[in-house]
Structure formats: C-alpha cells, structure tokens
Amino acid sequence: MFTEDAPPENDPRWEDLLRRAAEAFDDLTLKRGYQYYKQGRAALDDPEATRQLHATVAGTESYRTRIDLGDLKGSECTCPVGRPCKHMAAALMEWAGYHGYPVPALANATTLASRPRPASGAGKQNAAIERLARDAARIPEMSVPEWLDLFDRCLAPIAHQVRNTQYVKQALGLFYKIKPELAPGAERMFELNALLFLMRHAAETQSNPALGSNTYLGYFTHLAVTDLHEAAMGCLARPLPDVGEPLLESRLRETADGLRAAMLTPGPTQDYDLKHYCALWDTWLAARPGSEALYAEELRALEAAEPGLPAQSRGAWNTAALRMRFGLSDDEGALALLGGEGGRQGAASAGGLMELLGELARTEQWERLLRWLTALAPWMAGRRLRELEAYAGLWDAAVAKLPEAEPGMWEALESLLPASQSIYEDRLLAAGRYEEWIDIQLSFGREPLDYRATELAPLEKHAPHALLPFYHQAVERYVGMKNRASYKSAVKLLKRLAKLYKKLKREERWIEFYELFELRHSRLRALQEELRKGKLS
Image (tube, rainbow, N blue to C red; front, side, top):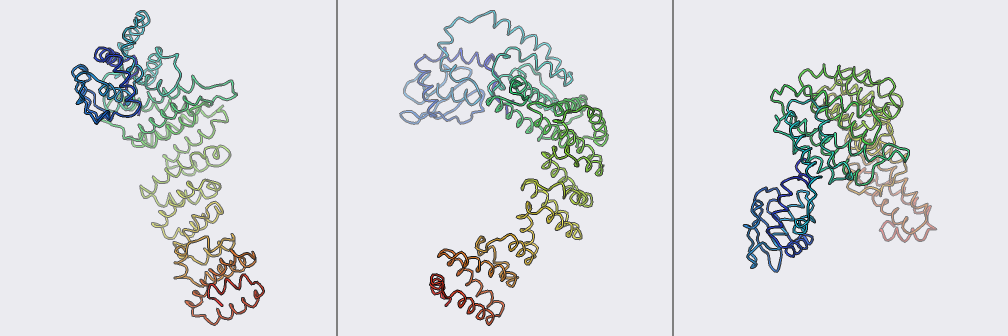
C-alpha cells in the first residue's frame, strides 16, 4: 500500500519537479490549473506513468494533453493556447495528488521558487541523508535489528511532524530512498519490517498515558496505524520468495522474535502485533523446511517469557503457545490452553482457531479435526454467529468424510443453543429432520407467517403432518388477539390447513375441526366476516 506511494516532499525528484513547474508555468496558469484539479476535471490515462502523462481535461470542450515529466516546456495540449496551459497544470496536479505529493505546493511553485532557501538547515539534512546512504550500503548484509536502528535514524528529519498518513508516506519514502537493490526474499523482509517498525513508532510517540491508558491514539494517528497494519497483513499474505538466500532464515527468526516481544507487551499496537505474529507463523514460517523444529524452538521462547507476564498479555501468550503446540500436533496441550480466563481472553483468536482447523480439513486430517471439534463445543458457547458458522462448516466437512460422526455434530450444535439456533435449524431442514425443526418453532413461539410460503414448501411436500400443530397453534393465537389484522392472519393459515388436510386425505377431519372452530367463535363477527371473505364459510 504505502511502499508504492510517492517519496516525501524533500525527495530530490519532487524538488526538481517544483523547480521545472515554476519555470514552465506562470503563477496565474498554475492557479487556474489548481481550480480545474479541485473540480476533478483532469482524468489520467495511466496515473502510474513515470515519464509521460496522457490525460483528458474538461474545459470549454474536452482537451487531450501530453506531459513530459522530464521536459514540461515540451508538453502539448490540444487547446488553442499553444504553450504550457491550465489543462496541462491540472493534469500534472492530478498525477501529483495520486502519488501523495502536496498539490498546493505545486500550485504555488512560482511563489516558492522566488523565496530564499535556508541553506544551513537543508545542508545539514542532506549531509545526514548522505551519511545514512553510506551506512545503508550494508543493508543487504544487515540483521533485522540493524535495519530497525537504521529506520530510527532515518526519521530524524521529520521527527517533529504529526504521526498521520502523510507522515507515514514520508517516512517510508526515506526508508526506500536509501535502500539498495535486494534479493527477492530480503526485499519482502525489508518491506514487512519497515511497516511494522513504523506502525509501532507512530503509535508509541502518539499514545497518551495522561489518560490513564497506554492505548489511546489520536484520530489521524489511528488511521495511519490501521493502514500500516493492513499493509503488513497484505505483505504477509503474499508468498515469501526463496531462492536460497543465506540470511533469509535468520531474518525470519529475528522478525518473529520482534513480534513475540511486541505482542507480549501491553500497548496501542498489541492486538495488531498478535495478528502479525500469527500470520507470520501461519504463512511464512509454517511453510519452511523443518517447521516442527521451529515450532519447538518458539514454544521454548514463549515459555521462557511467561514468568511475570502482565495480565493484559495472557491472552496473547495463550494464543501463541496454542499455535505452537498445534503445529507440533500436541492437541492435548493446545486444548488445555483454552481453559481458564487466559483462554477466554485469547478468544479474539476464535476466528484464527477456525483457520487452524481449516488447515486440518485441507490436509484431510479428519480424525484429528473431529477430536478438535468435539472438544471445542463447550468453548464455543457465547461466540459470535460468524464464528459459530465457521465451526458448523467444519463439522459439515468432517461429517461428509466420516458419516458416523453425525450424532456428535447434532449434539455439539444443540449444546450451543440458542446462539446456534439459525445454524441448527438450517441443518435440520437440509437433513430432512422436519419434526425436530417444528419442535423448535413451537418451543420458541415462532409464527408460520414469519416464513415465506416457499420456505415451508419442502415441509408441506415431505412432512405435511409435521406442520399441522404449527399452524393450529398459530391460528388459536391469532384469534385470541381479537383484532381485524390477526383475524386475517388466522384465515390465511386456515386456508393452508385446508390444503394440508386434503393432501393428507383427511378431509373429514378438516370438516370436523372447522365446524367446531366456527361454532366456538360464532360471536366474533369480525372473524366471521374474514372467514366469509376467505370463502371458508
């Protein structure tokens, strides 16, 4: 996300573009172009272009512009001006805005160019950048902690700025400005660690302990931190290139060490760091050769870190230790970590746990999956519907391969009622267990008219007798309400009942019931009117 954005404002390329814009355009043209830009009149053919831009700009009519970023004076527009015009300026600003550059600076390029520049501050900054560039020549051989130290030094020129999205773009621009070409795996590791470092840096410097919490972030900082988190998760979602790079394994372990420390430390990014930690193990580390040894090593590191952990970190520790034991096929030890308050705090990992179990389904470890699903039933109580649906979906997969496990599925879903009610009911219908479905409707006081006729059609076709008590009970309830609307609802159901009795070839029973029904309610004139309208009397 961020690594594809433009470098910061002090990037020499941006400074050079401002200078050339001041030379090619007069101030009035830039201001008019800025108005066109704000009105959204410029549409770039390819906003990712880096040399020549082609755009359509809506003016008096639609004009086509071609802008040479290396020679603005040599650019062209189909408008009658015949020189750098407001349409070109608008297209140039559209490109700058797309890449994250400050467009107002471009609109004021001629004014900025006429101001004297303080040489001393700029000179010091450039000297610092040059020193960083010399040190950065060692980036291909550096460890991850050395990268983090370099990132910290890179931020000195912008340390005074508010930690918002623009700051993040500038910071990443500084990181990438000094980065030499790297091997594919190192490139990905550099990207991930740059995003993680900057996320923690932005959050730590903007948290507000004065509010009695170390997790408060300002609104714009929160947006920047969230964007960095999403970018890091996107980075981890892509396969890690591996072409036999000698430092890749050590950098992976160093990254895991850093994430372990971060997710066990209470702070504004702790939850994000836990997600990154889990994603690192689930995607990159689990796929490494000898992953079992990696799991065992990480479990030892977690156990060494456990003594003295603050209460806020117990859930994260449980989640991490469970993952390691799961990777080692130590299911008994993993399940033990789900008990107690720590396990409940790790319930944010309920979705993650379903993903782990999904791996068992993908690798067709059906017996192991079945043991997990059976053991998890009490732990799933009170979970959100989305998590219960994932759990039930895994049961479906297991039962499809192990039909003898079906009674266990019904028992597990029943134990989770009423939270699992919609899931349980759907499976009852799919399995043709219509009488049990009706029992649930009756026990929960459901109304037949809550369902569309098409939803009840399978029952009318395959188990019409099961619907009789459902309809009869609802009819009496509607009549007891004693209002015109409820009488109309009763008549609708009576007409359905008539069809059901006919389908069951029990017309005499229907006639007997209806005559008695009409007699019992003969004094309810409004009901009698509705019965006549429904042609039931």
